[in-house]
Length: 498
Image (cartoon, rainbow, N blue to C red; front, side, top):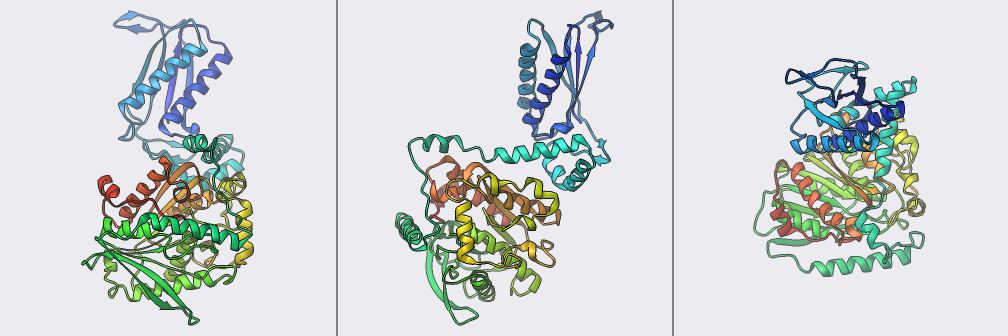
């Protein structure tokens, strides 16, 4: 892999050599997002050797680098590395000149420890594909692969470093935190937030028709869906959305902004669903209602004005992301939908209610529940309170897709979003990796340093505006189409609180 050769004529101490090797490793791995394991450094004293430039003897301190090259690596990247190397040389070996930094050619192929090395820019995919091998080698005493696992864990942990804009804002402001233990008080607060958000949205634009329809659940209960569709148009894709709120708050109005935006951006029929809430309705009321609703929507897609062959997407936020994963898995196994789902959107989802469900090879990097136990918006106390209200069966496939008999295989393309400062962060990260390992096409967006569903509660942040844009781009990916930034800006509004 990248091979850096330092040729020096000045005297270097062992400590200086160690510092130069560390500097090169750090600079390369950070600039090119490459594991430290890949970076090789060789240091040679050429003071007693004959070296030539322009046919004449010329002795100088030089660094030659042989690296992979690809479209993800630009001239400015190499220039930045060259400048950084020059600066580090001056710091570590003051009073001497680094005469030359030279990058050579391209590393076409190679193997290390029996593994084919990836092309430039594909390190992350290579790590995901070979993670289990790395774990085995590390457990077998290979310190280099143990270092790779440690580096990966450290990089994941860094995602929890608070976003600078948010950190500055919190110096004079407090992030709202509800009392999840007191349902009456918590619902009153969240209901008021929802009303304010809906009022701020105002009525639907003339481009979008909205209506409500009651549908009957398996036990006779009448649930209600909210339908958004392009005015005067039929035959668009079908998008079904599931609200969040820890299974204890929320309703079919919560994702109205997305319903309207997706209808306008993609010509889609968008259905915002509802499910009964805990603690009045314990588990499995929510997944049962979600499954019944999805079955009804699929069966009645044409009467809703949709054409599922152009796309049938199921998606949700937080608790809605959990329900999306579980019900998509169940309906796939049951083959119960009148039309197959073509895509899933999982936004900051709960996937692993406990560590026992995490695959052994990923337990080492499932750290966010502990690391972010005191995070803003959603913390450990909130998660514990939710569990007390819901009383779920943690072994049920209706609570985690990892409880299914034959999980993951055959699922449609899946778009996953995670927040770095979220206890649920690693649920989404690991689930996306496992899906990819099982042949599912995936797309992943990570928002470093931001708390759970930040876009809903801190919509003024640049990171929140980016999250909304990312969501439209991700939905376009699921629908196998494209959406311009101009179109997103035209239809986009801040999502209601989730």
